[in-house]
Length: 179
Image (cartoon, rainbow, N blue to C red; front, side, top):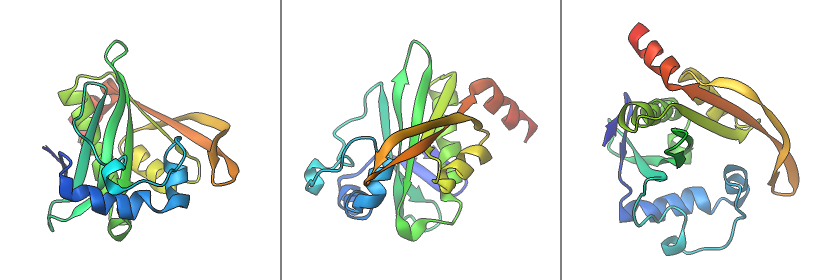
């Protein structure tokens, strides 16, 4: 388990899947902007939130609020490249838990996992340019805005731009020493 200030990142439990599927996957318009894969009608047992096991290229977590113990969302470190020592991160907070600063804490905890536990050199965030919550969470954790990919994401009938952010391990460790 990875501990943040407000959250715990823990393995995904079977009981989490139905909640995550209903609140995150079944909102088609929101899900279309959160994943490059097309939305398809799925049962919770076939949900992308139903995870058998993590492997070396992806680590799935459920997000739990520390104080209440409630399930607050899901996150993952994905596309882990052992040769280049890099990965991407994704965060999805349940609607009833948003605007509490949890995403910022989740990003920080994923950085702890990626850099301190996995020994990665670089973490990447790619998100829609209008996803201010994720961009804010990433920049608060030290990610640097590296650019915009124009019209790369087909989202619910329209092309959207994608923001690209990155964080290097050396910068993350330096900011921790200064804090």
